[in-house]
Image (cartoon, rainbow, N blue to C red):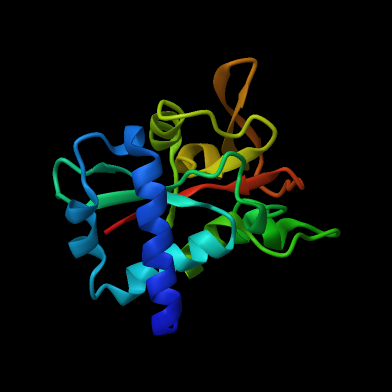
Length: 181
């Protein structure tokens, strides 16, 4: 990331932070900026979240660690992270019509983590997300071992978490992630 891209990203993150204060009550930009300053890997991850359509924003400060938690806050699952199966095993298991990759691998390459069910519900408590799309969620090992993976969405004014075969992929399913800084 160039110095100009860094400055533009910080400006954009500050504008989004100030526009959506209800997502991070009790925090100020002055609390957040020092956590970003000099953290090149975190800034690169946020840059990739932004470039793929995630619209990252602060959702809270982690009580135990004091870290600032960023999350994808785009209204729908990030468009640059859709049409992916769940993980490498699912991708390798497809015989034909393979997608371009997997959600787990894409998140790891970006230095971010998929939301799990609890984090997804937390995000949904801060706004309305995934009314037309769905998002893969970090899946417990016992579900994954049986060939499934979890996804979430919002329909009919309710948040749903459900399962699908991990090798499946859809144009309207991507993944949401978080980054602790």
